[in-house]
Image 1: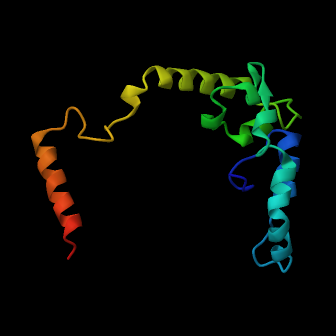
Image 2: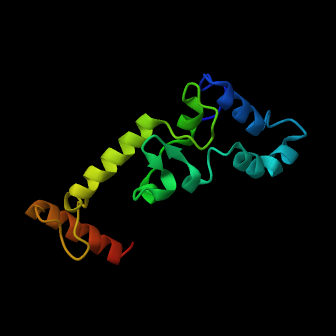
Image 3: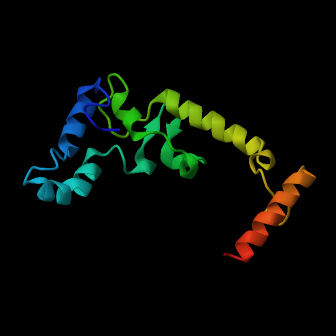
Length: 142
């Protein structure tokens, strides 16, 4: 995701953070030292951590009921034109997750393709035979 050959960084904000995390050539004698510092450098970029402090025009992430299920890409924070705040989540991404997670909750039962204590409601007789055969193979390994 952060390889210079993979994408061009449109904002100074993101270019600086990626450069700060860069490990360099794997043959370089300083790699071990840079690798040891890498976790701290990632945290210092402030785009990957402190989810509760992040916010968008829709509100503070710390107050959002969907925070634990939201998976907005930290890179989108740095790619938002004009954004210099590592806590500022792009409105489009926030709106997308708010809408999709809200609607997923509306269709909660449909989002689970199986029943934990039984067969799916519309399993065909052929599929039942295949599952029975698969289970017998697992029960009696060769």
